[in-house]
Image 1: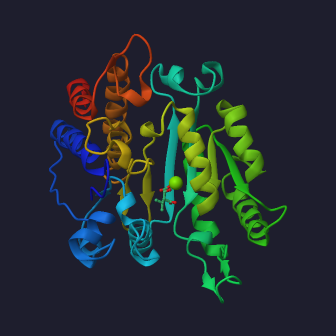
Image 2: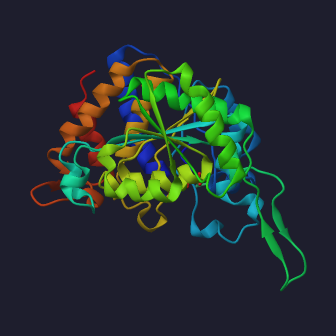
Length: 349
Ligand code: IPM
Ligand code: MG
């Protein structure tokens, strides 16, 4: 699903890497395309056309580009591109969103933070994706003009916290075994419950060290000492905010991939948006989409060695080639297409 803005161009490069990696690994692929976001609205009058959801459900994995654009800003809220992606997440029950932020090669120089602060950053944000304030009821805008109120509800049930918590513990167990649960338990009841459930799971994962932090402090630690963080498990909105900050540590939001998983379906997408200002100009960084394909091999096809090979190809490519968002002195600048081609050249599964 290409979506809008730079979605189609980054997806084209990611698909090329997907095909090359599958061919080298002896995996047969069947690819289909379906509209979503503004493209869904243009094609079928809805940001998530029924047929697109049906086809996503018939697939082993979905690769999503990006959604949104200024031409859709005036649409009714229910028809905005963002509703499409939220409905797709809900429709596929993708309750866990994994957003790894690590530094590839010598990209630390491209970060807005000092190189020594970020250079060994390797963290994973595990974000709850189908609950919390994004989906809580009641919600709305009510009342007479001038006296209206807008409201949303931040709500988590114990089973919802437990299933994302388990993913957090499992992922941390395969990493450096430090799990940081992020909440706002000094103010919000929903966070008090979140903390209690996380604590109750801890004895089942004795190898993992669980700690808690308030979200305001966590946002500070992310830019103060990101190298001290391993796995962060948090709710939908806190995860949305913290993962954008985490992305910037790595040099550019154009570097951050993600996997959204549930018990049956999976979707892979770059964390960045549709960047309408550079769409169609061959300037976008396709690496987040390409690295998302890497995650697809690990989490959907159970071929972690292919993800390793894709990451390695990205690191080798970055040694010489850079898109403009991560350009530093001494490197050669390329566009979106050439970046994809270089990664394919460097790919050895
Ligand atoms: C993200 C995006 C989405 C979100 C938007 C586009 C609805 O910011 O994937 O982080 O808020 O989840
Ligand atoms: Mg976001």
